[in-house]
Length: 111
Length: 118
Image: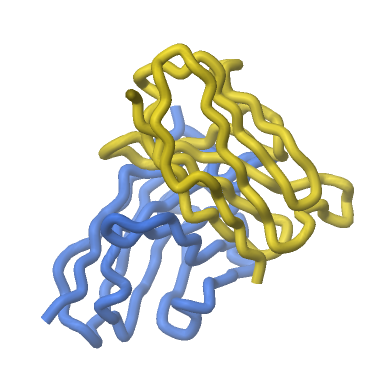
């Protein structure tokens, strides 16, 4: 089974600064069709998760351009530039290339 | 507007059964695959089941295979999760989710809480 390892487990960021979250896969996430099915979700406190990024770097409808996904193969990053108060919560990476697996989550706190 | 509303959760004893429902609106339900995802208290997310738009294929996580059954009624715009032989480790918030053409879980319901305890 594919394991997604997220780092850090938690991070505390000053408003207006950048946050960066890593997601490392135990296997390459490039599928035979050439696409890489790596997604990012944010679960705000007390809410259901919401989709941020799909296929590594595509922002879902309504997601601010402060959220930037990148990476390839086994190494992926979510960067949040100019962190705002509504960005706090737990971020999960997810892969659908081999079965369906979530990372363990990264908790973003505001300093 | 896409809406997914789960129901059917509650407190049950180990070994018992429960059936969850998810009523969908705001999109053509019969055209999309649907998922169940759960989250144990203070834990991360776990995908548990997928059903194709026409029920032709169903997939399960190993943790629930043989005990849980996903189904749907496209005439009622409703997704189901039948849970048998429940264990304490099945205690979780259960979410239904709809995919999009490019992403797996584009829309989520608000969840329904299942507690398995004696």
